[in-house]
Length: 597
Image (cartoon, rainbow, N blue to C red; front, side, top):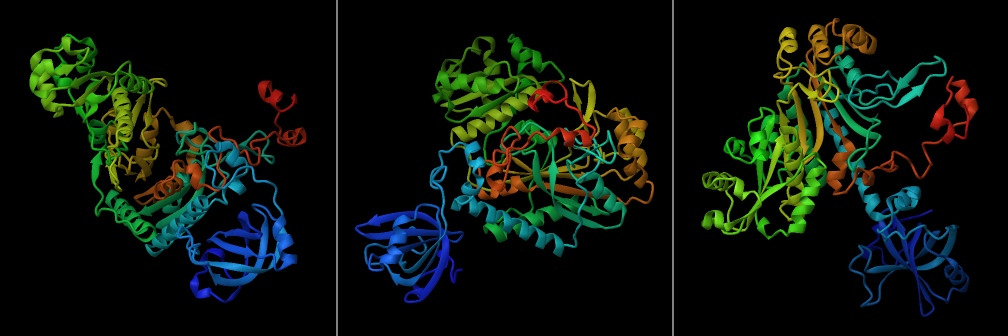
Protein backbone atom coordinates (compact mmCIF):
# COMPACT_ATOMS: atom_id res chain seq x y z
CA UNK A 1 0.00 0.00 0.00
CA UNK A 2 3.00 2.36 0.06
CA UNK A 3 6.20 2.93 -1.84
CA UNK A 4 7.77 5.20 0.77
CA UNK A 5 7.42 6.12 4.44
CA UNK A 6 6.23 9.66 5.17
CA UNK A 7 9.21 10.91 7.14
CA UNK A 8 11.87 9.45 4.83
CA UNK A 9 11.21 11.61 1.77
CA UNK A 10 13.57 14.46 0.92
CA UNK A 11 14.48 16.69 -2.01
CA UNK A 12 16.07 13.76 -3.86
CA UNK A 13 12.53 12.45 -4.46
CA UNK A 14 11.35 15.60 -6.31
CA UNK A 15 9.44 14.78 -9.53
CA UNK A 16 8.99 11.13 -8.51
CA UNK A 17 5.61 9.48 -8.00
CA UNK A 18 5.05 8.00 -4.53
CA UNK A 19 2.37 6.08 -2.67
CA UNK A 20 1.91 6.87 1.02
CA UNK A 21 -0.34 5.53 3.78
CA UNK A 22 -0.95 6.85 7.26
CA UNK A 23 -3.05 8.95 9.60
CA UNK A 24 -4.21 12.51 9.04
CA UNK A 25 -2.32 14.50 11.63
CA UNK A 26 -3.81 17.83 10.61
CA UNK A 27 -6.07 19.10 7.81
CA UNK A 28 -6.17 22.75 6.64
CA UNK A 29 -8.34 24.39 3.98
CA UNK A 30 -6.60 27.47 2.55
CA UNK A 31 -8.59 29.31 -0.08
CA UNK A 32 -9.85 26.25 -1.85
CA UNK A 33 -6.62 24.26 -1.56
CA UNK A 34 -6.59 21.50 1.07
CA UNK A 35 -3.37 20.73 2.92
CA UNK A 36 -3.00 17.50 4.88
CA UNK A 37 -0.12 16.58 7.20
CA UNK A 38 0.10 12.84 6.73
CA UNK A 39 1.72 10.89 9.57
CA UNK A 40 3.23 7.47 10.01
CA UNK A 41 5.83 6.18 12.47
CA UNK A 42 8.66 7.95 10.61
CA UNK A 43 7.20 11.45 10.69
CA UNK A 44 5.06 13.90 8.69
CA UNK A 45 4.77 14.90 5.04
CA UNK A 46 2.54 17.64 3.61
CA UNK A 47 0.08 16.51 0.95
CA UNK A 48 -1.74 19.06 -1.24
CA UNK A 49 -5.12 18.52 -2.93
CA UNK A 50 -6.08 20.98 -5.68
CA UNK A 51 -9.70 21.62 -6.71
CA UNK A 52 -8.63 20.95 -10.32
CA UNK A 53 -9.08 17.23 -9.56
CA UNK A 54 -12.71 17.51 -8.51
CA UNK A 55 -13.32 13.85 -7.67
CA UNK A 56 -10.31 13.67 -5.36
CA UNK A 57 -10.98 17.11 -3.92
CA UNK A 58 -14.52 16.08 -2.86
CA UNK A 59 -13.02 13.22 -0.86
CA UNK A 60 -10.39 15.52 0.63
CA UNK A 61 -13.12 17.89 1.82
CA UNK A 62 -14.63 15.10 3.93
CA UNK A 63 -11.55 13.70 5.62
CA UNK A 64 -10.74 14.61 9.21
CA UNK A 65 -8.04 14.15 11.86
CA UNK A 66 -6.94 10.56 12.47
CA UNK A 67 -8.63 9.19 9.33
CA UNK A 68 -6.47 6.49 7.75
CA UNK A 69 -5.82 7.29 4.09
CA UNK A 70 -3.84 6.07 1.09
CA UNK A 71 -2.41 8.70 -1.24
CA UNK A 72 -0.68 8.61 -4.59
CA UNK A 73 1.02 11.73 -5.87
CA UNK A 74 4.03 13.58 -7.19
CA UNK A 75 6.78 15.01 -4.99
CA UNK A 76 7.60 18.65 -5.59
CA UNK A 77 9.50 21.45 -3.88
CA UNK A 78 7.47 23.73 -1.67
CA UNK A 79 7.05 27.26 -2.96
CA UNK A 80 9.70 29.65 -1.71
CA UNK A 81 8.84 31.05 1.71
CA UNK A 82 6.53 28.17 2.68
CA UNK A 83 9.22 25.73 3.82
CA UNK A 84 8.92 24.31 7.33
CA UNK A 85 12.36 24.01 8.98
CA UNK A 86 10.84 22.11 11.94
CA UNK A 87 10.14 19.08 9.71
CA UNK A 88 12.72 16.84 8.07
CA UNK A 89 10.39 16.86 5.05
CA UNK A 90 9.77 20.60 5.34
CA UNK A 91 11.28 21.52 1.96
CA UNK A 92 8.98 19.30 -0.11
CA UNK A 93 5.32 18.32 -0.46
CA UNK A 94 3.26 15.77 -2.37
CA UNK A 95 0.64 16.84 -4.90
CA UNK A 96 -2.12 14.27 -4.45
CA UNK A 97 -3.38 12.61 -7.62
CA UNK A 98 -5.24 9.70 -5.99
CA UNK A 99 -6.89 9.48 -2.57
CA UNK A 100 -8.52 6.56 -0.78
CA UNK A 101 -10.08 6.66 2.68
CA UNK A 102 -8.96 3.37 4.22
CA UNK A 103 -10.79 3.93 7.50
CA UNK A 104 -12.70 6.72 9.15
CA UNK A 105 -12.09 7.80 12.75
CA UNK A 106 -14.28 9.24 15.46
CA UNK A 107 -13.17 12.52 16.97
CA UNK A 108 -10.11 11.58 19.08
CA UNK A 109 -10.60 11.63 22.87
CA UNK A 110 -7.73 14.14 23.00
CA UNK A 111 -5.42 15.86 20.54
CA UNK A 112 -2.07 14.24 20.00
CA UNK A 113 -0.27 17.50 20.72
CA UNK A 114 -2.24 17.97 23.95
CA UNK A 115 -0.33 16.85 27.04
CA UNK A 116 -2.58 18.29 29.73
CA UNK A 117 -4.61 15.07 29.75
CA UNK A 118 -5.27 12.95 32.83
CA UNK A 119 -3.16 9.80 32.89
CA UNK A 120 -6.14 7.51 33.39
CA UNK A 121 -7.79 9.01 30.29
CA UNK A 122 -4.58 8.52 28.33
CA UNK A 123 -4.36 4.89 29.45
CA UNK A 124 -8.02 4.22 28.62
CA UNK A 125 -7.30 5.25 25.02
CA UNK A 126 -3.72 4.01 25.01
CA UNK A 127 -3.89 3.07 21.32
CA UNK A 128 -4.41 6.79 20.57
CA UNK A 129 -1.89 7.94 23.17
CA UNK A 130 0.79 5.72 21.61
CA UNK A 131 0.37 7.50 18.27
CA UNK A 132 2.18 10.50 19.73
CA UNK A 133 5.68 10.78 18.21
CA UNK A 134 7.16 11.17 21.70
CA UNK A 135 5.62 7.91 22.89
CA UNK A 136 6.69 6.05 19.75
CA UNK A 137 10.24 7.33 20.15
CA UNK A 138 10.37 5.99 23.71
CA UNK A 139 9.16 2.53 22.70
CA UNK A 140 11.54 2.42 19.75
CA UNK A 141 14.42 3.38 22.00
CA UNK A 142 13.32 0.65 24.38
CA UNK A 143 13.49 -1.84 21.52
CA UNK A 144 16.98 -0.61 20.62
CA UNK A 145 18.08 -1.00 24.26
CA UNK A 146 16.85 -4.60 24.54
CA UNK A 147 18.36 -5.46 21.17
CA UNK A 148 21.76 -4.10 22.19
CA UNK A 149 21.62 -5.90 25.55
CA UNK A 150 20.88 -9.22 23.86
CA UNK A 151 23.74 -8.76 21.42
CA UNK A 152 26.20 -7.92 24.20
CA UNK A 153 25.34 -10.72 26.62
CA UNK A 154 25.17 -13.40 23.94
CA UNK A 155 28.56 -12.31 22.59
CA UNK A 156 29.75 -12.62 26.21
CA UNK A 157 28.72 -16.27 26.42
CA UNK A 158 25.27 -16.03 28.03
CA UNK A 159 22.41 -18.19 26.79
CA UNK A 160 18.73 -17.22 26.89
CA UNK A 161 16.68 -19.67 28.99
CA UNK A 162 13.03 -19.23 29.95
CA UNK A 163 11.85 -20.03 33.47
CA UNK A 164 8.28 -20.83 34.60
CA UNK A 165 5.53 -18.25 35.06
CA UNK A 166 3.47 -20.62 37.19
CA UNK A 167 5.47 -21.60 40.25
CA UNK A 168 5.11 -21.70 44.03
CA UNK A 169 5.16 -18.87 46.52
CA UNK A 170 8.57 -18.15 48.06
CA UNK A 171 9.60 -15.36 50.48
CA UNK A 172 11.07 -12.58 48.31
CA UNK A 173 9.86 -9.45 50.07
CA UNK A 174 6.52 -8.62 48.43
CA UNK A 175 3.09 -10.21 48.23
CA UNK A 176 2.63 -12.81 45.50
CA UNK A 177 0.01 -12.80 42.79
CA UNK A 178 -1.75 -16.14 43.21
CA UNK A 179 -3.30 -18.28 40.48
CA UNK A 180 -5.81 -20.95 41.55
CA UNK A 181 -5.33 -24.42 40.11
CA UNK A 182 -8.37 -26.12 38.58
CA UNK A 183 -6.72 -29.55 38.48
CA UNK A 184 -5.44 -29.35 42.06
CA UNK A 185 -8.43 -28.00 43.96
CA UNK A 186 -7.52 -25.73 46.85
CA UNK A 187 -3.94 -25.25 45.62
CA UNK A 188 -2.42 -22.18 44.03
CA UNK A 189 0.42 -21.24 41.76
CA UNK A 190 2.26 -17.97 42.34
CA UNK A 191 3.46 -15.68 39.58
CA UNK A 192 7.22 -15.15 39.97
CA UNK A 193 8.50 -12.06 41.76
CA UNK A 194 11.78 -12.91 40.03
CA UNK A 195 13.38 -16.06 38.57
CA UNK A 196 15.75 -16.16 41.57
CA UNK A 197 15.53 -19.83 42.53
CA UNK A 198 15.32 -21.11 38.97
CA UNK A 199 18.44 -19.28 37.86
CA UNK A 200 20.31 -20.78 40.82
CA UNK A 201 19.09 -24.20 39.76
CA UNK A 202 20.38 -23.50 36.24
CA UNK A 203 23.83 -22.89 37.71
CA UNK A 204 23.61 -26.21 39.57
CA UNK A 205 22.63 -27.68 36.19
CA UNK A 206 25.92 -26.55 34.66
CA UNK A 207 24.52 -23.91 32.29
CA UNK A 208 27.37 -21.56 33.36
CA UNK A 209 25.95 -18.26 32.01
CA UNK A 210 22.21 -17.62 31.84
CA UNK A 211 20.20 -14.53 30.96
CA UNK A 212 16.57 -13.75 30.38
CA UNK A 213 14.51 -10.64 29.69
CA UNK A 214 11.43 -11.66 31.60
CA UNK A 215 8.24 -10.45 33.22
CA UNK A 216 8.06 -10.37 37.02
CA UNK A 217 5.07 -9.79 39.29
CA UNK A 218 4.84 -8.16 42.72
CA UNK A 219 1.69 -7.18 44.56
CA UNK A 220 3.03 -4.07 46.32
CA UNK A 221 2.25 -0.39 46.68
CA UNK A 222 2.96 1.46 43.45
CA UNK A 223 4.91 4.61 42.61
CA UNK A 224 6.48 6.29 39.58
CA UNK A 225 9.18 3.61 39.15
CA UNK A 226 7.15 0.57 40.22
CA UNK A 227 4.47 -1.56 38.52
CA UNK A 228 2.68 -4.80 39.49
CA UNK A 229 4.17 -6.44 36.38
CA UNK A 230 7.51 -5.30 35.11
CA UNK A 231 10.38 -6.43 32.91
CA UNK A 232 13.67 -7.59 34.34
CA UNK A 233 17.00 -8.37 32.75
CA UNK A 234 18.04 -11.40 34.78
CA UNK A 235 21.58 -12.82 34.70
CA UNK A 236 23.53 -15.52 36.53
CA UNK A 237 27.10 -16.80 36.26
CA UNK A 238 28.87 -19.85 37.70
CA UNK A 239 32.34 -19.90 39.28
CA UNK A 240 32.45 -16.16 39.90
CA UNK A 241 33.15 -13.67 42.64
CA UNK A 242 31.77 -10.16 43.07
CA UNK A 243 34.24 -8.44 40.74
CA UNK A 244 33.46 -10.86 37.89
CA UNK A 245 29.77 -10.01 37.93
CA UNK A 246 30.25 -6.30 38.52
CA UNK A 247 32.86 -5.90 35.77
CA UNK A 248 30.63 -7.71 33.28
CA UNK A 249 27.65 -5.51 34.19
CA UNK A 250 29.78 -2.36 33.88
CA UNK A 251 30.99 -3.35 30.43
CA UNK A 252 27.42 -4.00 29.35
CA UNK A 253 26.23 -0.58 30.56
CA UNK A 254 29.11 1.26 28.92
CA UNK A 255 28.44 -0.58 25.66
CA UNK A 256 24.71 0.20 25.90
CA UNK A 257 25.11 3.94 26.55
CA UNK A 258 27.80 4.27 23.88
CA UNK A 259 25.82 2.57 21.11
CA UNK A 260 22.27 3.71 21.93
CA UNK A 261 22.75 7.21 23.36
CA UNK A 262 26.31 7.95 22.17
CA UNK A 263 27.06 8.90 25.79
CA UNK A 264 30.20 7.67 27.58
CA UNK A 265 30.07 6.27 31.11
CA UNK A 266 33.10 6.29 33.43
CA UNK A 267 35.53 3.38 33.45
CA UNK A 268 35.51 2.04 36.09
CA UNK A 269 32.35 2.96 37.97
CA UNK A 270 33.09 4.34 41.45
CA UNK A 271 32.33 2.10 44.41
CA UNK A 272 31.03 3.05 47.82
CA UNK A 273 30.17 0.98 50.87
CA UNK A 274 26.63 0.95 52.18
CA UNK A 275 27.89 2.50 55.43
CA UNK A 276 29.53 5.41 53.62
CA UNK A 277 26.50 6.00 51.40
CA UNK A 278 24.17 6.19 54.39
CA UNK A 279 26.62 8.41 56.31
CA UNK A 280 27.16 10.91 53.48
CA UNK A 281 23.82 10.81 51.67
CA UNK A 282 21.27 9.10 53.93
CA UNK A 283 20.46 6.71 51.10
CA UNK A 284 21.79 3.46 49.63
CA UNK A 285 21.07 4.85 46.15
CA UNK A 286 22.59 8.33 46.29
CA UNK A 287 22.21 10.75 43.42
CA UNK A 288 25.78 11.93 42.91
CA UNK A 289 24.67 14.73 40.58
CA UNK A 290 23.65 16.72 43.68
CA UNK A 291 26.70 18.24 45.44
CA UNK A 292 25.15 18.25 48.91
CA UNK A 293 26.11 15.87 51.71
CA UNK A 294 24.97 15.03 55.22
CA UNK A 295 27.51 15.95 57.90
CA UNK A 296 27.66 14.06 61.19
CA UNK A 297 27.52 16.47 64.15
CA UNK A 298 26.44 14.16 66.99
CA UNK A 299 29.87 14.51 68.64
CA UNK A 300 29.23 18.23 69.13
CA UNK A 301 25.83 17.74 70.73
CA UNK A 302 26.37 15.18 73.51
CA UNK A 303 26.55 17.82 76.28
CA UNK A 304 24.27 20.59 75.01
CA UNK A 305 21.12 21.49 76.95
CA UNK A 306 18.97 20.99 73.87
CA UNK A 307 17.51 17.51 74.51
CA UNK A 308 16.28 17.27 70.90
CA UNK A 309 19.96 17.07 69.93
CA UNK A 310 21.64 15.60 73.00
CA UNK A 311 19.18 12.70 73.28
CA UNK A 312 19.94 11.16 69.85
CA UNK A 313 23.61 12.17 70.19
CA UNK A 314 23.93 9.91 73.26
CA UNK A 315 21.79 7.10 71.81
CA UNK A 316 23.80 4.27 70.15
CA UNK A 317 21.01 3.97 67.57
CA UNK A 318 20.60 7.74 67.16
CA UNK A 319 22.05 10.26 64.79
CA UNK A 320 22.42 14.05 64.60
CA UNK A 321 23.28 15.25 61.09
CA UNK A 322 23.43 18.57 59.28
CA UNK A 323 22.70 19.54 55.68
CA UNK A 324 24.22 22.83 54.54
CA UNK A 325 22.32 24.51 51.68
CA UNK A 326 24.34 27.13 49.75
CA UNK A 327 22.32 30.33 49.43
CA UNK A 328 19.62 28.83 51.64
CA UNK A 329 19.46 31.83 53.97
CA UNK A 330 17.24 33.45 51.35
CA UNK A 331 14.51 30.87 52.06
CA UNK A 332 11.27 32.29 53.39
CA UNK A 333 9.58 30.99 56.52
CA UNK A 334 6.90 29.48 54.25
CA UNK A 335 9.52 27.51 52.31
CA UNK A 336 11.10 26.23 55.54
CA UNK A 337 7.67 25.19 56.82
CA UNK A 338 7.04 23.29 53.59
CA UNK A 339 10.33 21.44 53.97
CA UNK A 340 9.42 20.67 57.59
CA UNK A 341 6.15 19.17 56.41
CA UNK A 342 8.04 17.21 53.76
CA UNK A 343 10.45 15.52 56.21
CA UNK A 344 7.48 14.70 58.42
CA UNK A 345 6.45 12.12 55.82
CA UNK A 346 9.61 10.22 56.72
CA UNK A 347 8.98 10.22 60.46
CA UNK A 348 10.89 13.38 61.39
CA UNK A 349 9.29 15.29 64.27
CA UNK A 350 10.62 18.64 63.05
CA UNK A 351 13.33 20.40 61.09
CA UNK A 352 15.70 22.63 63.03
CA UNK A 353 17.73 25.17 61.09
CA UNK A 354 20.29 27.97 61.35
CA UNK A 355 20.48 30.79 58.83
CA UNK A 356 24.03 32.07 58.33
CA UNK A 357 23.46 35.70 57.41
CA UNK A 358 27.00 36.93 58.20
CA UNK A 359 29.68 34.29 58.80
CA UNK A 360 32.21 36.61 60.45
CA UNK A 361 29.89 38.01 63.14
CA UNK A 362 29.60 34.84 65.22
CA UNK A 363 26.29 34.33 67.00
CA UNK A 364 25.12 37.81 65.94
CA UNK A 365 25.34 36.88 62.27
CA UNK A 366 23.06 33.86 62.70
CA UNK A 367 19.31 33.46 62.85
CA UNK A 368 17.57 30.49 64.43
CA UNK A 369 15.18 29.53 67.27
CA UNK A 370 17.73 26.96 68.55
CA UNK A 371 20.72 29.29 69.00
CA UNK A 372 19.86 29.94 72.66
CA UNK A 373 20.42 26.24 73.41
CA UNK A 374 23.91 26.10 71.87
CA UNK A 375 27.13 27.49 73.43
CA UNK A 376 29.43 29.70 71.36
CA UNK A 377 32.16 27.07 70.97
CA UNK A 378 29.66 24.50 69.65
CA UNK A 379 28.26 27.03 67.19
CA UNK A 380 31.73 27.93 65.89
CA UNK A 381 32.79 24.29 65.53
CA UNK A 382 29.48 23.54 63.83
CA UNK A 383 30.06 26.26 61.24
CA UNK A 384 33.55 24.91 60.61
CA UNK A 385 32.31 21.31 60.23
CA UNK A 386 29.64 22.29 57.73
CA UNK A 387 31.88 24.81 55.89
CA UNK A 388 28.96 27.22 56.01
CA UNK A 389 29.50 30.70 54.58
CA UNK A 390 27.41 33.87 54.54
CA UNK A 391 24.05 33.32 52.87
CA UNK A 392 23.90 29.58 53.64
CA UNK A 393 21.32 27.68 55.68
CA UNK A 394 21.95 24.59 57.79
CA UNK A 395 19.15 22.05 58.32
CA UNK A 396 19.40 19.46 61.12
CA UNK A 397 18.03 15.98 61.64
CA UNK A 398 18.09 14.43 65.11
CA UNK A 399 16.39 11.11 65.87
CA UNK A 400 16.92 7.40 65.34
CA UNK A 401 19.51 6.96 62.60
CA UNK A 402 17.01 5.43 60.19
CA UNK A 403 14.62 8.38 60.50
CA UNK A 404 17.42 10.94 60.10
CA UNK A 405 18.78 9.12 57.06
CA UNK A 406 15.37 8.79 55.42
CA UNK A 407 14.32 12.37 56.15
CA UNK A 408 17.54 14.25 55.37
CA UNK A 409 18.36 11.93 52.48
CA UNK A 410 15.03 12.74 50.84
CA UNK A 411 15.36 16.44 51.74
CA UNK A 412 18.79 16.55 50.08
CA UNK A 413 17.29 15.30 46.81
CA UNK A 414 14.26 17.59 46.97
CA UNK A 415 16.34 20.68 47.68
CA UNK A 416 18.75 19.67 44.94
CA UNK A 417 15.91 19.70 42.40
CA UNK A 418 14.08 22.69 43.88
CA UNK A 419 17.13 24.94 43.95
CA UNK A 420 18.83 23.85 40.73
CA UNK A 421 21.79 21.97 42.22
CA UNK A 422 21.35 18.90 39.98
CA UNK A 423 24.24 18.67 37.52
CA UNK A 424 23.71 17.42 33.97
CA UNK A 425 25.65 14.16 33.94
CA UNK A 426 25.40 10.38 34.10
CA UNK A 427 26.67 9.36 37.54
CA UNK A 428 26.76 5.57 38.00
CA UNK A 429 27.85 4.03 41.29
CA UNK A 430 28.28 0.62 42.86
CA UNK A 431 27.10 0.30 46.45
CA UNK A 432 28.69 -2.67 48.23
CA UNK A 433 29.12 -4.26 51.67
CA UNK A 434 25.46 -4.21 52.61
CA UNK A 435 24.36 -5.59 55.97
CA UNK A 436 23.13 -9.14 55.60
CA UNK A 437 20.04 -8.48 57.77
CA UNK A 438 18.06 -5.57 59.13
CA UNK A 439 15.84 -5.55 62.20
CA UNK A 440 12.11 -5.10 61.66
CA UNK A 441 10.61 -3.58 64.83
CA UNK A 442 7.04 -4.28 63.74
CA UNK A 443 7.73 -7.98 63.17
CA UNK A 444 10.29 -8.21 65.99
CA UNK A 445 12.50 -10.22 63.66
CA UNK A 446 15.43 -10.04 61.29
CA UNK A 447 14.65 -9.55 57.60
CA UNK A 448 17.03 -9.88 54.64
CA UNK A 449 18.26 -6.59 53.22
CA UNK A 450 18.24 -8.22 49.77
CA UNK A 451 16.82 -11.76 49.76
CA UNK A 452 17.35 -14.94 51.80
CA UNK A 453 19.67 -16.54 49.22
CA UNK A 454 22.33 -13.82 49.32
CA UNK A 455 25.69 -15.12 50.53
CA UNK A 456 27.09 -13.64 53.74
CA UNK A 457 30.69 -12.46 53.90
CA UNK A 458 31.36 -15.22 56.47
CA UNK A 459 31.46 -18.92 55.59
CA UNK A 460 30.80 -20.26 59.10
CA UNK A 461 27.09 -20.99 59.77
CA UNK A 462 27.60 -20.76 63.55
CA UNK A 463 29.18 -17.31 63.25
CA UNK A 464 26.24 -16.13 61.14
CA UNK A 465 23.75 -17.40 63.73
CA UNK A 466 25.70 -15.82 66.61
CA UNK A 467 26.25 -12.35 65.10
CA UNK A 468 23.52 -11.48 62.60
CA UNK A 469 23.73 -7.76 63.35
CA UNK A 470 27.40 -7.59 62.33
CA UNK A 471 27.08 -9.82 59.27
CA UNK A 472 27.78 -8.23 55.90
CA UNK A 473 26.51 -9.67 52.64
CA UNK A 474 28.21 -10.26 49.32
CA UNK A 475 25.65 -8.06 47.59
CA UNK A 476 26.08 -5.15 45.21
CA UNK A 477 23.70 -2.58 43.73
CA UNK A 478 24.21 -0.50 40.61
CA UNK A 479 22.85 3.03 41.04
CA UNK A 480 22.44 5.65 38.32
CA UNK A 481 21.46 9.24 39.08
CA UNK A 482 19.71 8.28 42.29
CA UNK A 483 17.84 5.28 40.87
CA UNK A 484 18.67 1.69 41.69
CA UNK A 485 19.11 0.14 38.24
CA UNK A 486 19.97 -3.33 39.39
CA UNK A 487 21.03 -5.45 42.28
CA UNK A 488 22.69 -8.77 42.73
CA UNK A 489 24.91 -10.89 44.90
CA UNK A 490 26.99 -13.95 45.21
CA UNK A 491 24.56 -16.69 46.24
CA UNK A 492 24.76 -19.24 49.02
CA UNK A 493 25.83 -22.55 47.44
CA UNK A 494 26.18 -24.58 50.65
CA UNK A 495 23.10 -26.12 52.24
CA UNK A 496 24.32 -25.71 55.81
CA UNK A 497 25.00 -21.99 55.35
CA UNK A 498 21.64 -21.54 53.58
CA UNK A 499 19.80 -23.20 56.46
CA UNK A 500 21.65 -20.97 58.96
CA UNK A 501 20.59 -17.84 57.03
CA UNK A 502 16.98 -19.01 57.00
CA UNK A 503 17.15 -19.80 60.71
CA UNK A 504 18.26 -16.21 61.49
CA UNK A 505 15.20 -15.07 59.52
CA UNK A 506 12.94 -17.22 61.66
CA UNK A 507 12.37 -19.84 58.95
CA UNK A 508 12.84 -23.23 60.57
CA UNK A 509 13.91 -26.38 58.77
CA UNK A 510 10.38 -27.69 58.36
CA UNK A 511 9.17 -24.42 56.82
CA UNK A 512 12.27 -24.21 54.65
CA UNK A 513 11.74 -27.71 53.30
CA UNK A 514 8.08 -26.95 52.62
CA UNK A 515 8.72 -23.66 50.79
CA UNK A 516 11.87 -24.41 48.81
CA UNK A 517 13.12 -27.85 49.67
CA UNK A 518 13.87 -28.31 45.96
CA UNK A 519 16.61 -25.65 46.19
CA UNK A 520 18.05 -27.03 49.44
CA UNK A 521 18.18 -30.50 47.87
CA UNK A 522 19.87 -29.13 44.74
CA UNK A 523 22.63 -27.54 46.84
CA UNK A 524 23.65 -31.08 47.91
CA UNK A 525 24.21 -32.26 44.32
CA UNK A 526 27.36 -30.36 43.43
CA UNK A 527 26.31 -26.70 43.42
CA UNK A 528 29.08 -24.42 42.06
CA UNK A 529 29.87 -21.00 43.52
CA UNK A 530 27.63 -18.63 41.56
CA UNK A 531 26.25 -15.12 41.51
CA UNK A 532 24.34 -12.76 39.34
CA UNK A 533 22.50 -9.52 38.94
CA UNK A 534 19.08 -8.33 37.77
CA UNK A 535 18.26 -4.98 36.20
CA UNK A 536 14.88 -3.28 36.09
CA UNK A 537 14.58 -2.77 32.33
CA UNK A 538 11.68 -0.32 32.68
CA UNK A 539 13.68 1.88 35.07
CA UNK A 540 16.69 1.78 32.76
CA UNK A 541 14.60 2.85 29.76
CA UNK A 542 12.90 5.54 31.87
CA UNK A 543 16.28 7.09 32.69
CA UNK A 544 17.68 6.77 29.17
CA UNK A 545 14.60 8.39 27.59
CA UNK A 546 14.23 11.09 30.26
CA UNK A 547 10.69 9.92 31.06
CA UNK A 548 9.11 10.93 34.35
CA UNK A 549 7.57 7.50 35.01
CA UNK A 550 8.09 3.91 33.90
CA UNK A 551 4.47 4.02 32.72
CA UNK A 552 5.66 6.23 29.86
CA UNK A 553 8.04 3.53 28.59
CA UNK A 554 5.63 0.59 28.86
CA UNK A 555 3.14 -0.03 26.06
CA UNK A 556 0.23 -1.00 28.30
CA UNK A 557 0.97 -0.17 31.95
CA UNK A 558 -1.29 -0.24 34.98
CA UNK A 559 -2.37 2.83 36.93
CA UNK A 560 -1.14 3.59 40.45
CA UNK A 561 -4.09 1.56 41.73
CA UNK A 562 -2.87 -1.48 39.75
CA UNK A 563 -5.76 -1.36 37.30
CA UNK A 564 -5.97 -1.14 33.52
CA UNK A 565 -8.44 1.50 32.23
CA UNK A 566 -8.08 0.13 28.68
CA UNK A 567 -9.30 -3.40 29.41
CA UNK A 568 -11.08 -2.65 32.72
CA UNK A 569 -8.87 -5.21 34.48
CA UNK A 570 -9.00 -6.58 37.08
CA UNK A 571 -12.58 -7.70 36.59
CA UNK A 572 -15.05 -10.09 38.15
CA UNK A 573 -15.55 -13.55 36.68
CA UNK A 574 -18.76 -15.49 36.44
CA UNK A 575 -19.91 -17.90 39.09
CA UNK A 576 -19.39 -20.93 36.86
CA UNK A 577 -15.67 -20.15 36.56
CA UNK A 578 -15.35 -19.71 40.32
CA UNK A 579 -17.21 -22.95 40.97
CA UNK A 580 -14.89 -24.78 38.57
CA UNK A 581 -11.93 -23.53 40.63
CA UNK A 582 -13.57 -24.37 43.95
CA UNK A 583 -13.68 -20.71 44.99
CA UNK A 584 -16.50 -18.88 46.76
CA UNK A 585 -16.39 -15.17 47.45
CA UNK A 586 -17.38 -13.81 50.83
CA UNK A 587 -18.06 -10.44 52.44
CA UNK A 588 -17.10 -7.32 50.50
CA UNK A 589 -15.57 -9.33 47.69
CA UNK A 590 -18.92 -11.03 47.10
CA UNK A 591 -20.72 -7.67 47.21
CA UNK A 592 -18.39 -6.19 44.61
CA UNK A 593 -18.89 -9.24 42.41
CA UNK A 594 -22.65 -8.87 42.51
CA UNK A 595 -23.70 -10.74 45.62
CA UNK A 596 -22.52 -14.23 44.76
CA UNK A 597 -21.47 -16.49 47.63
